Amino acid sequence: MLVLYEPKIYPIMNDTTVLVIDDEKNLLDSIVDLLEINDFNVLSAQSGHEALDLLKKEMPDIILCDIMMPAMNGYLFLKELRKNPLAVGVPFIFLSAKSDRNDIRKGMNLMADDYITKPFTQKELLDSIKARISRIEVLKTEIMMFMKNIQHNLNSSNINSHEISETTKELDTLKALLNSQNKAIEKYCYLNSHKVRGPLCRIMGLIELFNSSDDSMAKEIVNHLKSSADDLDKITREITMVISSHKPKSA
Image 1 (tube, helix red, strand yellow):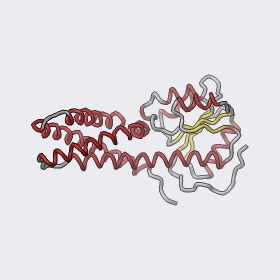
Image 2 (tube, one colour):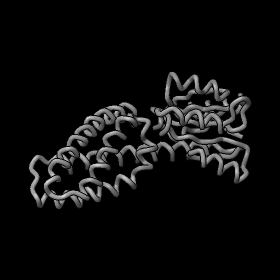
Image 3 (cartoon, one colour):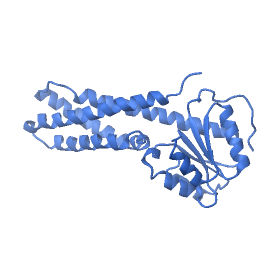
Image 4 (tube, helix red, strand yellow):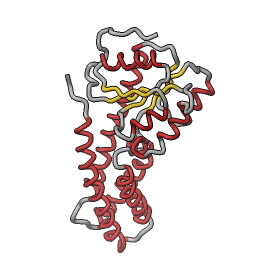
């Protein structure tokens, strides 16, 4: 059972919006109170359908959802949620009295970020939320650095054969980084995903062509890569503005 009105545990999270979904009103109210006294912005819903309506107006930073609900249970709600491209990267935490391993595995297979069994303590819930928020901030930083590296490595105006050779090595590194960061990009694609994926796919294809081409084609391919990098640079600037507007402020 939650014990309310203890001292704030994470008072700096005041720019984070949490959506809480639970058909049990007493527990829902308790969680809302807990989050509000810890300076979170809170949205609440007592059903999956009500939550989907809320999401048409505002996208939260993180979602807490009960599993056992009438009409639309938590699993069905998560499936519907992931159909919304803006919600793909929103961290999702299941709250449930169901502690069977199969239930937990089912939640994880649906791309839930965490699974907290009831009853839980304040600290358990807040620690999980903090971990999800911290992970998203890390992903944002990694992707920002990744995009800047693409721009830095591909935006050279003078290209010679030595630079082409060096660029080949750099592109191999970029290709490996693209593959290793794919999951991170998936989690972050709620920020202009369709815009980011287009240039990234073009760059991946051009890298493959670059690796199989001779020097006579290299400059033309690099020019195309630079064009795609310019597109990414523009998107990066847009994302930077979004990140800045959502970045938690220090107390």
